[in-house]
Amino acid sequence: MEEMKPSAANSPPLTPLGFLERAATVYGDCTSIVYGNSTVYTWRETNIRCLRVASSLSSSIGIRRSDVVSVLSANTPAMYELQFAVPMSGAILNNINTRLDTRTVSVLLRHCESKLLFVDVFYSDLAVEAISLFDKPPILVLISDEEESVDVADRSKFCYSYEDLVERGDPEFNWVRPVSEWDPIVVNYTSGTTSSPKGVVHCHRGIFVMAIDSLVDWTVPKNPVYLWTLPMFHANGWCYPWAIAAVGGTNVCLRKFQTPLIYRLIRDHGVTHMCGAPVVLNMLTADRESQPLTSPVHFLTAGSTPPASVLLRAESLGFIVSHGYGLTETAGVIVSCVWKPKWNLLPASDRARLKVRQGVRTVGFTEIDVVDPGSGRSVERDGETFGEIVMRGSSIMLGYLNDPIGTGKSLKNGWLFTGDVGVIHGDGYLEIKDRSKDVIITGGENVSSVEVEKVLYTNPAVNEAAVVARPDEFWGETPCAFVSLKTGLTRKPTEKEIIEDCKKKMPHYMVPKTVTFLEELPKTSTGKIPKFVLKKMASKMGSTRLSRM
Image (cartoon, rainbow, N blue to C red):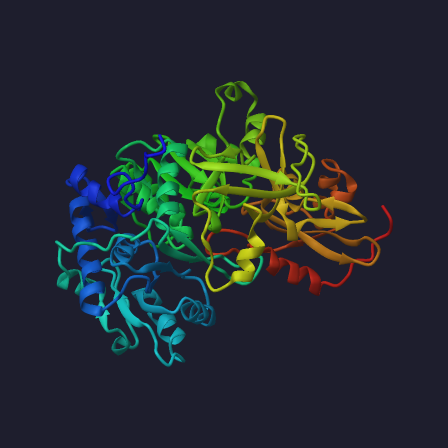
Protein backbone atom coordinates (compact mmCIF):
# COMPACT_ATOMS: atom_id res chain seq x y z
CA MET A 1 0.00 0.00 0.00
CA GLU A 2 3.02 2.31 0.33
CA GLU A 3 2.67 3.41 -3.30
CA MET A 4 -0.78 4.85 -2.66
CA LYS A 5 -0.25 8.64 -2.55
CA PRO A 6 -2.40 11.77 -2.84
CA SER A 7 -2.86 13.02 -6.38
CA ALA A 8 -4.33 16.07 -8.07
CA ALA A 9 -7.55 14.12 -8.55
CA ASN A 10 -8.13 13.39 -4.88
CA SER A 11 -6.59 16.33 -3.05
CA PRO A 12 -7.95 19.65 -4.31
CA PRO A 13 -8.11 22.20 -1.47
CA LEU A 14 -11.28 22.12 0.61
CA THR A 15 -13.11 25.47 0.54
CA PRO A 16 -16.64 26.56 1.46
CA LEU A 17 -16.77 28.85 -1.58
CA GLY A 18 -17.77 25.94 -3.81
CA PHE A 19 -21.08 25.68 -1.95
CA LEU A 20 -22.33 28.77 -3.81
CA GLU A 21 -21.48 27.41 -7.24
CA ARG A 22 -23.32 24.18 -6.43
CA ALA A 23 -26.30 26.08 -4.99
CA ALA A 24 -26.66 27.98 -8.27
CA THR A 25 -26.85 24.67 -10.12
CA VAL A 26 -29.03 22.67 -7.74
CA TYR A 27 -31.18 25.42 -6.24
CA GLY A 28 -30.88 28.06 -8.98
CA ASP A 29 -34.58 29.04 -9.02
CA CYS A 30 -35.01 28.81 -5.24
CA THR A 31 -35.03 31.95 -3.10
CA SER A 32 -31.64 32.69 -1.59
CA ILE A 33 -32.14 36.07 0.08
CA VAL A 34 -35.15 38.03 1.32
CA TYR A 35 -34.82 41.52 2.75
CA GLY A 36 -37.44 44.13 3.59
CA ASN A 37 -40.46 44.57 1.37
CA SER A 38 -38.93 44.30 -2.09
CA THR A 39 -35.51 42.62 -2.14
CA VAL A 40 -35.59 38.99 -3.24
CA TYR A 41 -32.83 37.02 -4.98
CA THR A 42 -32.51 33.45 -6.22
CA TRP A 43 -29.42 31.32 -5.79
CA ARG A 44 -28.57 31.78 -9.46
CA GLU A 45 -28.73 35.56 -9.02
CA THR A 46 -26.72 35.47 -5.81
CA ASN A 47 -23.97 33.46 -7.47
CA ILE A 48 -23.76 35.92 -10.36
CA ARG A 49 -23.73 38.95 -8.05
CA CYS A 50 -20.91 37.44 -5.98
CA LEU A 51 -18.89 36.64 -9.10
CA ARG A 52 -19.36 40.20 -10.36
CA VAL A 53 -18.18 41.74 -7.09
CA ALA A 54 -15.21 39.37 -6.89
CA SER A 55 -14.33 40.26 -10.50
CA SER A 56 -14.46 43.99 -9.78
CA LEU A 57 -12.29 43.63 -6.69
CA SER A 58 -9.70 41.63 -8.59
CA SER A 59 -9.74 43.20 -12.05
CA SER A 60 -10.87 46.79 -11.57
CA ILE A 61 -9.58 47.69 -8.12
CA GLY A 62 -6.51 45.49 -8.03
CA ILE A 63 -7.15 43.48 -4.90
CA ARG A 64 -4.67 40.63 -4.82
CA ARG A 65 -4.43 37.24 -3.18
CA SER A 66 -3.97 37.55 0.62
CA ASP A 67 -4.96 41.24 0.74
CA VAL A 68 -7.37 41.95 3.59
CA VAL A 69 -10.78 43.39 2.67
CA SER A 70 -12.99 44.57 5.53
CA VAL A 71 -16.76 44.91 5.85
CA LEU A 72 -18.71 47.13 8.24
CA SER A 73 -22.35 46.21 7.82
CA ALA A 74 -25.53 44.95 9.41
CA ASN A 75 -27.17 41.71 8.23
CA THR A 76 -28.05 42.95 4.74
CA PRO A 77 -28.00 41.11 1.38
CA ALA A 78 -24.65 42.72 0.55
CA MET A 79 -23.19 41.53 3.84
CA TYR A 80 -24.25 37.98 3.00
CA GLU A 81 -22.85 38.17 -0.53
CA LEU A 82 -19.52 39.50 0.69
CA GLN A 83 -18.93 36.37 2.78
CA PHE A 84 -18.42 34.70 -0.62
CA ALA A 85 -17.38 37.54 -2.92
CA VAL A 86 -14.38 38.79 -0.94
CA PRO A 87 -12.58 35.41 -0.65
CA MET A 88 -13.61 34.57 -4.24
CA SER A 89 -11.37 37.47 -5.28
CA GLY A 90 -8.47 35.85 -3.43
CA ALA A 91 -8.67 38.32 -0.54
CA ILE A 92 -9.02 37.57 3.17
CA LEU A 93 -12.37 38.65 4.63
CA ASN A 94 -12.51 40.77 7.77
CA ASN A 95 -15.96 41.48 9.22
CA ILE A 96 -16.00 44.39 11.70
CA ASN A 97 -18.35 44.72 14.64
CA THR A 98 -20.74 47.60 13.88
CA ARG A 99 -21.03 48.57 17.54
CA LEU A 100 -17.38 49.39 18.01
CA ASP A 101 -16.29 52.98 18.56
CA THR A 102 -14.31 54.98 16.01
CA ARG A 103 -10.94 54.46 17.69
CA THR A 104 -11.33 50.68 17.86
CA VAL A 105 -12.45 50.41 14.23
CA SER A 106 -9.38 52.44 13.25
CA VAL A 107 -7.10 50.19 15.31
CA LEU A 108 -8.49 47.02 13.74
CA LEU A 109 -8.17 48.36 10.19
CA ARG A 110 -4.54 49.28 10.85
CA HIS A 111 -3.78 45.99 12.56
CA CYS A 112 -4.99 43.82 9.66
CA GLU A 113 -3.66 46.31 7.05
CA SER A 114 -7.01 46.42 5.31
CA LYS A 115 -6.85 47.49 1.65
CA LEU A 116 -10.56 48.14 1.18
CA LEU A 117 -13.57 48.70 3.43
CA PHE A 118 -17.17 48.03 2.42
CA VAL A 119 -19.41 50.33 4.46
CA ASP A 120 -23.11 50.01 5.15
CA VAL A 121 -24.66 53.44 4.62
CA PHE A 122 -25.81 53.50 8.25
CA TYR A 123 -22.16 53.42 9.38
CA SER A 124 -20.70 55.85 6.84
CA ASP A 125 -19.88 58.51 9.44
CA LEU A 126 -18.18 55.94 11.66
CA ALA A 127 -16.05 54.68 8.77
CA VAL A 128 -15.03 58.13 7.51
CA GLU A 129 -13.99 59.22 11.00
CA ALA A 130 -12.11 55.94 11.59
CA ILE A 131 -9.84 56.45 8.56
CA SER A 132 -9.43 60.21 8.98
CA LEU A 133 -5.92 59.88 10.43
CA PHE A 134 -4.65 57.27 7.95
CA ASP A 135 -1.76 58.27 5.68
CA LYS A 136 -2.90 55.62 3.20
CA PRO A 137 -6.51 54.86 4.09
CA PRO A 138 -8.29 51.81 2.71
CA ILE A 139 -10.54 52.32 -0.31
CA LEU A 140 -14.11 52.96 0.79
CA VAL A 141 -17.09 51.32 -0.96
CA LEU A 142 -20.58 52.43 0.04
CA ILE A 143 -23.37 49.89 0.49
CA SER A 144 -26.70 51.66 0.00
CA ASP A 145 -30.03 50.42 1.34
CA GLU A 146 -33.01 50.47 -1.01
CA GLU A 147 -35.37 49.81 1.88
CA GLU A 148 -34.38 52.89 3.89
CA SER A 149 -33.23 56.38 2.94
CA VAL A 150 -30.10 57.59 4.75
CA ASP A 151 -28.08 60.75 4.22
CA VAL A 152 -24.32 60.40 3.75
CA ALA A 153 -22.41 63.41 5.04
CA ASP A 154 -19.37 63.07 2.77
CA ARG A 155 -19.89 60.91 -0.31
CA SER A 156 -16.61 62.15 -1.77
CA LYS A 157 -14.77 59.77 0.57
CA PHE A 158 -16.33 56.77 -1.16
CA CYS A 159 -14.64 55.67 -4.36
CA TYR A 160 -17.36 53.22 -5.43
CA SER A 161 -20.82 52.04 -4.56
CA TYR A 162 -21.51 48.37 -4.01
CA GLU A 163 -23.91 48.20 -6.94
CA ASP A 164 -21.22 49.82 -9.14
CA LEU A 165 -19.05 46.78 -8.49
CA VAL A 166 -21.95 44.45 -9.23
CA GLU A 167 -22.67 46.19 -12.54
CA ARG A 168 -19.11 46.41 -13.82
CA GLY A 169 -18.05 42.87 -12.79
CA ASP A 170 -17.78 39.83 -15.04
CA PRO A 171 -20.52 37.21 -14.37
CA GLU A 172 -18.23 34.55 -15.87
CA PHE A 173 -15.31 35.46 -13.59
CA ASN A 174 -13.05 32.51 -12.82
CA TRP A 175 -12.94 32.98 -9.06
CA VAL A 176 -9.62 32.70 -7.29
CA ARG A 177 -9.32 29.30 -5.69
CA PRO A 178 -6.97 28.71 -2.75
CA VAL A 179 -3.55 27.31 -3.57
CA SER A 180 -3.73 25.33 -0.33
CA GLU A 181 -6.68 24.58 1.92
CA TRP A 182 -4.54 26.04 4.71
CA ASP A 183 -4.61 29.46 3.02
CA PRO A 184 -6.30 32.07 5.25
CA ILE A 185 -9.90 32.90 4.31
CA VAL A 186 -11.02 35.15 7.20
CA VAL A 187 -9.62 37.17 10.08
CA ASN A 188 -12.14 37.77 12.87
CA TYR A 189 -11.52 39.96 15.86
CA THR A 190 -12.66 38.66 19.23
CA SER A 191 -15.35 40.57 21.08
CA GLY A 192 -12.81 41.75 23.64
CA THR A 193 -14.98 40.88 26.64
CA THR A 194 -11.97 39.60 28.60
CA SER A 195 -8.98 41.31 27.00
CA SER A 196 -7.77 43.34 24.05
CA PRO A 197 -9.29 42.25 20.71
CA LYS A 198 -7.28 39.65 18.83
CA GLY A 199 -7.31 38.86 15.12
CA VAL A 200 -8.29 35.20 14.76
CA VAL A 201 -7.16 33.74 11.42
CA HIS A 202 -9.02 30.77 9.91
CA CYS A 203 -8.20 28.79 6.77
CA HIS A 204 -10.41 27.44 3.96
CA ARG A 205 -10.19 23.90 5.35
CA GLY A 206 -11.31 24.89 8.84
CA ILE A 207 -14.29 26.90 7.60
CA PHE A 208 -15.32 24.11 5.21
CA VAL A 209 -15.31 21.54 8.02
CA MET A 210 -17.11 23.89 10.41
CA ALA A 211 -19.86 24.70 7.90
CA ILE A 212 -20.58 21.05 7.14
CA ASP A 213 -20.33 20.08 10.81
CA SER A 214 -22.83 22.81 11.71
CA LEU A 215 -25.41 21.32 9.36
CA VAL A 216 -24.89 17.77 10.58
CA ASP A 217 -24.93 18.53 14.29
CA TRP A 218 -28.02 20.77 14.20
CA THR A 219 -29.67 18.40 11.68
CA VAL A 220 -30.44 21.21 9.23
CA PRO A 221 -32.43 19.83 6.26
CA LYS A 222 -32.40 20.98 2.65
CA ASN A 223 -34.20 24.27 1.90
CA PRO A 224 -34.45 25.65 5.45
CA VAL A 225 -35.64 29.21 6.05
CA TYR A 226 -32.97 30.88 8.17
CA LEU A 227 -33.61 34.19 9.96
CA TRP A 228 -30.46 36.25 10.55
CA THR A 229 -30.82 37.29 14.20
CA LEU A 230 -27.14 36.42 14.80
CA PRO A 231 -24.77 39.14 13.49
CA MET A 232 -22.76 37.91 10.53
CA PHE A 233 -19.84 39.95 11.83
CA HIS A 234 -19.72 37.62 14.86
CA ALA A 235 -17.46 34.73 13.81
CA ASN A 236 -19.03 34.89 10.34
CA GLY A 237 -22.41 34.04 11.82
CA TRP A 238 -20.98 30.74 13.17
CA CYS A 239 -20.28 29.75 9.51
CA TYR A 240 -23.98 29.63 8.58
CA PRO A 241 -23.62 31.97 5.56
CA TRP A 242 -21.73 29.16 3.83
CA ALA A 243 -23.71 26.35 5.45
CA ILE A 244 -27.10 27.69 4.33
CA ALA A 245 -25.78 27.87 0.75
CA ALA A 246 -24.78 24.22 0.97
CA VAL A 247 -28.40 23.20 1.61
CA GLY A 248 -30.06 25.80 -0.62
CA GLY A 249 -31.80 27.62 2.21
CA THR A 250 -33.52 30.99 2.25
CA ASN A 251 -31.67 33.74 4.14
CA VAL A 252 -34.08 36.22 5.70
CA CYS A 253 -31.86 39.25 6.32
CA LEU A 254 -32.56 41.61 9.18
CA ARG A 255 -31.03 45.00 9.93
CA LYS A 256 -32.35 45.55 13.47
CA PHE A 257 -33.48 43.22 16.22
CA GLN A 258 -37.05 44.13 17.15
CA THR A 259 -39.19 41.50 18.83
CA PRO A 260 -42.49 42.30 17.02
CA LEU A 261 -40.64 42.31 13.68
CA ILE A 262 -39.01 38.96 14.45
CA TYR A 263 -42.38 37.33 15.07
CA ARG A 264 -43.80 38.87 11.90
CA LEU A 265 -40.91 37.57 9.81
CA ILE A 266 -41.23 34.11 11.36
CA ARG A 267 -44.89 34.08 10.39
CA ASP A 268 -44.61 35.68 6.94
CA HIS A 269 -41.66 33.63 5.68
CA GLY A 270 -42.17 30.35 7.51
CA VAL A 271 -38.87 30.61 9.35
CA THR A 272 -37.52 27.23 10.46
CA HIS A 273 -34.11 28.07 11.95
CA MET A 274 -32.40 30.95 13.76
CA CYS A 275 -29.38 31.47 16.02
CA GLY A 276 -28.49 33.85 18.80
CA ALA A 277 -27.05 34.39 22.24
CA PRO A 278 -29.21 33.51 25.27
CA VAL A 279 -30.03 37.21 25.70
CA VAL A 280 -31.78 37.11 22.30
CA LEU A 281 -33.85 34.15 23.44
CA ASN A 282 -34.66 36.03 26.62
CA MET A 283 -35.87 39.06 24.66
CA LEU A 284 -38.02 36.91 22.38
CA THR A 285 -39.69 35.14 25.28
CA ALA A 286 -39.98 37.98 27.82
CA ASP A 287 -41.69 40.51 25.56
CA ARG A 288 -45.36 41.18 26.26
CA GLU A 289 -46.13 40.54 22.59
CA SER A 290 -44.59 37.08 22.66
CA GLN A 291 -47.17 34.58 21.47
CA PRO A 292 -47.06 30.84 20.78
CA LEU A 293 -45.67 30.00 17.35
CA THR A 294 -47.95 28.42 14.74
CA SER A 295 -45.15 26.01 13.78
CA PRO A 296 -41.91 25.07 15.60
CA VAL A 297 -38.75 27.11 15.09
CA HIS A 298 -35.33 25.62 15.80
CA PHE A 299 -33.17 28.02 17.82
CA LEU A 300 -29.46 27.39 18.35
CA THR A 301 -27.98 29.34 21.24
CA ALA A 302 -24.40 29.62 22.45
CA GLY A 303 -22.09 32.14 24.05
CA SER A 304 -23.15 31.82 27.67
CA THR A 305 -25.28 29.43 29.66
CA PRO A 306 -29.01 30.07 29.05
CA PRO A 307 -31.00 30.27 32.28
CA ALA A 308 -33.35 27.32 32.80
CA SER A 309 -36.30 29.70 33.19
CA VAL A 310 -35.62 31.17 29.74
CA LEU A 311 -35.45 27.70 28.19
CA LEU A 312 -38.76 26.74 29.74
CA ARG A 313 -40.45 29.91 28.45
CA ALA A 314 -38.99 29.38 24.97
CA GLU A 315 -40.20 25.80 24.79
CA SER A 316 -43.67 26.82 25.93
CA LEU A 317 -43.86 29.23 22.95
CA GLY A 318 -42.82 26.57 20.43
CA PHE A 319 -39.08 27.17 20.05
CA ILE A 320 -36.99 24.00 19.87
CA VAL A 321 -33.83 25.13 21.62
CA SER A 322 -30.43 23.56 20.99
CA HIS A 323 -27.56 24.63 23.20
CA GLY A 324 -23.90 24.64 22.23
CA TYR A 325 -20.49 26.10 22.87
CA GLY A 326 -17.86 27.61 20.64
CA LEU A 327 -15.32 30.38 20.37
CA THR A 328 -14.16 32.81 17.73
CA GLU A 329 -11.06 30.61 17.75
CA THR A 330 -13.15 27.56 16.70
CA ALA A 331 -15.17 29.37 13.96
CA GLY A 332 -18.47 28.12 15.34
CA VAL A 333 -20.23 25.70 17.66
CA ILE A 334 -18.04 22.67 18.36
CA VAL A 335 -19.80 21.31 21.48
CA SER A 336 -23.54 20.68 21.60
CA CYS A 337 -25.97 19.30 24.12
CA VAL A 338 -27.04 16.30 22.06
CA TRP A 339 -30.50 15.41 23.29
CA LYS A 340 -31.35 11.87 24.34
CA PRO A 341 -34.95 10.69 23.76
CA LYS A 342 -35.20 9.25 27.27
CA TRP A 343 -34.79 12.75 28.68
CA ASN A 344 -38.18 13.71 27.24
CA LEU A 345 -39.79 11.62 29.99
CA LEU A 346 -38.29 13.80 32.72
CA PRO A 347 -40.06 16.75 34.41
CA ALA A 348 -39.61 20.11 32.71
CA SER A 349 -37.25 21.40 35.39
CA ASP A 350 -34.97 18.36 34.99
CA ARG A 351 -35.01 18.71 31.20
CA ALA A 352 -33.98 22.35 31.52
CA ARG A 353 -31.16 21.42 33.91
CA LEU A 354 -29.78 18.95 31.38
CA LYS A 355 -30.24 21.28 28.43
CA VAL A 356 -28.14 24.10 29.94
CA ARG A 357 -25.08 21.84 29.88
CA GLN A 358 -22.85 22.50 26.89
CA GLY A 359 -22.67 18.80 25.95
CA VAL A 360 -20.29 16.74 23.84
CA ARG A 361 -18.05 17.45 20.87
CA THR A 362 -19.72 17.69 17.49
CA VAL A 363 -19.21 14.98 14.86
CA GLY A 364 -16.60 16.94 12.91
CA PHE A 365 -14.50 17.91 15.92
CA THR A 366 -11.71 15.79 17.38
CA GLU A 367 -11.42 16.06 21.15
CA ILE A 368 -12.57 18.10 24.16
CA ASP A 369 -11.21 17.74 27.68
CA VAL A 370 -11.13 19.50 31.04
CA VAL A 371 -7.70 19.54 32.65
CA ASP A 372 -6.22 20.55 35.96
CA PRO A 373 -4.27 23.81 35.38
CA GLY A 374 -1.41 22.63 37.57
CA SER A 375 -0.79 19.07 36.42
CA GLY A 376 -2.39 19.21 32.98
CA ARG A 377 -4.16 15.93 33.72
CA SER A 378 -7.84 15.30 32.98
CA VAL A 379 -10.11 16.05 35.91
CA GLU A 380 -12.48 13.52 37.47
CA ARG A 381 -15.73 13.06 35.58
CA ASP A 382 -17.86 13.85 38.60
CA GLY A 383 -19.57 17.07 37.53
CA GLU A 384 -17.85 18.90 40.38
CA THR A 385 -14.08 19.08 39.80
CA PHE A 386 -13.17 22.33 38.04
CA GLY A 387 -10.55 22.57 35.32
CA GLU A 388 -9.67 24.45 32.13
CA ILE A 389 -11.43 23.44 28.93
CA VAL A 390 -9.00 22.40 26.18
CA MET A 391 -9.76 21.19 22.66
CA ARG A 392 -8.40 20.21 19.27
CA GLY A 393 -9.99 19.80 15.87
CA SER A 394 -9.96 20.88 12.23
CA SER A 395 -11.74 24.18 12.79
CA ILE A 396 -9.25 25.51 15.34
CA MET A 397 -7.71 28.81 14.22
CA LEU A 398 -4.33 29.07 12.53
CA GLY A 399 -3.40 31.63 15.17
CA TYR A 400 -3.70 35.29 16.14
CA LEU A 401 -2.67 37.79 13.46
CA ASN A 402 0.70 39.41 14.20
CA ASP A 403 0.66 38.00 17.73
CA PRO A 404 3.04 35.03 18.10
CA ILE A 405 3.12 35.36 21.89
CA GLY A 406 -0.68 35.25 22.19
CA THR A 407 -0.80 32.35 19.74
CA GLY A 408 1.78 30.44 21.73
CA LYS A 409 -0.14 30.90 24.96
CA SER A 410 -3.36 29.57 23.45
CA LEU A 411 -2.01 26.85 21.15
CA LYS A 412 0.36 24.63 23.07
CA ASN A 413 1.04 20.93 23.60
CA GLY A 414 -1.31 20.06 20.76
CA TRP A 415 -4.32 21.79 22.35
CA LEU A 416 -6.21 25.08 22.28
CA PHE A 417 -6.41 26.35 25.85
CA THR A 418 -9.69 28.26 26.08
CA GLY A 419 -9.46 30.01 29.44
CA ASP A 420 -12.94 28.68 30.24
CA VAL A 421 -13.56 26.76 33.45
CA GLY A 422 -15.75 23.68 33.30
CA VAL A 423 -16.56 20.22 34.61
CA ILE A 424 -17.21 16.86 32.98
CA HIS A 425 -20.24 14.94 34.19
CA GLY A 426 -20.34 11.19 34.65
CA ASP A 427 -22.10 10.76 31.30
CA GLY A 428 -19.30 12.60 29.49
CA TYR A 429 -21.19 15.88 29.01
CA LEU A 430 -19.28 19.12 29.45
CA GLU A 431 -20.65 22.02 31.49
CA ILE A 432 -19.03 25.44 31.57
CA LYS A 433 -18.81 26.97 35.01
CA ASP A 434 -17.10 30.26 34.24
CA ARG A 435 -14.34 32.12 32.53
CA SER A 436 -11.13 31.60 34.50
CA LYS A 437 -11.00 35.35 35.12
CA ASP A 438 -14.59 35.41 36.39
CA VAL A 439 -14.28 32.78 39.12
CA ILE A 440 -14.78 34.52 42.49
CA ILE A 441 -12.43 33.43 45.26
CA THR A 442 -14.03 34.28 48.58
CA GLY A 443 -12.38 33.13 51.78
CA GLY A 444 -10.44 30.49 49.84
CA GLU A 445 -13.60 29.06 48.26
CA ASN A 446 -14.08 29.13 44.48
CA VAL A 447 -17.48 30.51 43.49
CA SER A 448 -18.76 30.12 39.93
CA SER A 449 -20.49 33.34 38.92
CA VAL A 450 -22.55 31.31 36.45
CA GLU A 451 -23.92 29.11 39.26
CA VAL A 452 -24.98 32.17 41.26
CA GLU A 453 -26.61 33.67 38.18
CA LYS A 454 -28.62 30.49 37.64
CA VAL A 455 -30.11 30.88 41.11
CA LEU A 456 -30.86 34.57 40.58
CA TYR A 457 -32.79 33.70 37.43
CA THR A 458 -35.11 31.47 39.45
CA ASN A 459 -36.49 34.60 41.12
CA PRO A 460 -39.66 35.45 39.14
CA ALA A 461 -38.92 39.18 39.34
CA VAL A 462 -35.45 38.94 37.74
CA ASN A 463 -35.11 39.67 34.02
CA GLU A 464 -31.30 39.74 33.69
CA ALA A 465 -28.52 38.88 36.11
CA ALA A 466 -24.74 38.97 36.13
CA VAL A 467 -22.37 38.31 39.03
CA VAL A 468 -18.80 39.57 39.44
CA ALA A 469 -16.24 39.86 42.22
CA ARG A 470 -16.26 42.89 44.52
CA PRO A 471 -13.26 43.57 46.79
CA ASP A 472 -13.81 42.71 50.45
CA GLU A 473 -11.54 43.61 53.37
CA PHE A 474 -12.06 40.30 55.16
CA TRP A 475 -12.86 37.68 52.50
CA GLY A 476 -10.67 39.11 49.72
CA GLU A 477 -13.66 39.33 47.39
CA THR A 478 -17.35 38.53 47.50
CA PRO A 479 -20.08 37.96 44.89
CA CYS A 480 -21.69 41.19 43.67
CA ALA A 481 -24.86 40.87 41.59
CA PHE A 482 -26.14 43.26 38.93
CA VAL A 483 -29.81 42.73 38.20
CA SER A 484 -32.50 44.15 35.93
CA LEU A 485 -36.11 43.49 36.84
CA LYS A 486 -39.03 42.50 34.67
CA THR A 487 -41.41 45.23 33.55
CA GLY A 488 -44.94 45.45 34.86
CA LEU A 489 -44.18 44.26 38.40
CA THR A 490 -46.75 45.36 40.95
CA ARG A 491 -43.98 45.53 43.52
CA LYS A 492 -40.21 45.54 43.02
CA PRO A 493 -38.12 43.43 45.37
CA THR A 494 -35.46 45.09 47.51
CA GLU A 495 -31.77 44.19 47.65
CA LYS A 496 -32.34 42.44 50.98
CA GLU A 497 -35.19 40.36 49.55
CA ILE A 498 -33.08 39.22 46.59
CA ILE A 499 -30.27 38.21 48.95
CA GLU A 500 -32.63 36.37 51.31
CA ASP A 501 -34.13 34.47 48.38
CA CYS A 502 -30.62 33.35 47.36
CA LYS A 503 -29.82 32.21 50.90
CA LYS A 504 -32.66 29.70 50.66
CA LYS A 505 -31.23 28.17 47.49
CA MET A 506 -27.42 28.03 47.82
CA PRO A 507 -24.57 27.86 50.33
CA HIS A 508 -24.14 31.15 52.15
CA TYR A 509 -20.60 31.72 50.91
CA MET A 510 -21.97 31.81 47.34
CA VAL A 511 -24.75 34.30 48.10
CA PRO A 512 -24.30 37.81 46.62
CA LYS A 513 -23.40 40.21 49.38
CA THR A 514 -24.49 43.21 47.34
CA VAL A 515 -27.15 43.62 44.66
CA THR A 516 -27.23 46.57 42.28
CA PHE A 517 -30.34 47.22 40.20
CA LEU A 518 -29.97 48.52 36.63
CA GLU A 519 -32.63 49.34 34.06
CA GLU A 520 -30.77 47.10 31.61
CA LEU A 521 -27.48 45.27 31.84
CA PRO A 522 -24.78 46.32 29.35
CA LYS A 523 -24.27 44.00 26.40
CA THR A 524 -21.83 43.51 23.57
CA SER A 525 -23.04 43.41 19.99
CA THR A 526 -23.24 39.63 20.21
CA GLY A 527 -25.51 39.68 23.25
CA LYS A 528 -22.87 38.89 25.86
CA ILE A 529 -22.78 40.79 29.12
CA PRO A 530 -19.27 42.32 29.30
CA LYS A 531 -18.28 41.47 32.85
CA PHE A 532 -15.19 43.63 32.73
CA VAL A 533 -17.55 46.63 32.64
CA LEU A 534 -19.42 45.37 35.69
CA LYS A 535 -16.14 44.57 37.45
CA LYS A 536 -15.10 48.20 37.06
CA MET A 537 -18.44 49.29 38.50
CA ALA A 538 -18.04 46.89 41.44
CA SER A 539 -14.48 48.07 42.05
CA LYS A 540 -15.60 51.70 42.17
CA MET A 541 -18.06 50.77 44.92
CA GLY A 542 -15.04 50.11 47.12
CA SER A 543 -14.42 47.21 49.47
CA THR A 544 -17.26 45.68 51.41
CA ARG A 545 -16.81 45.36 55.16
CA LEU A 546 -18.81 42.29 55.99
CA SER A 547 -18.56 40.38 59.22
CA ARG A 548 -17.65 36.69 59.28
CA MET A 549 -20.63 34.57 58.12
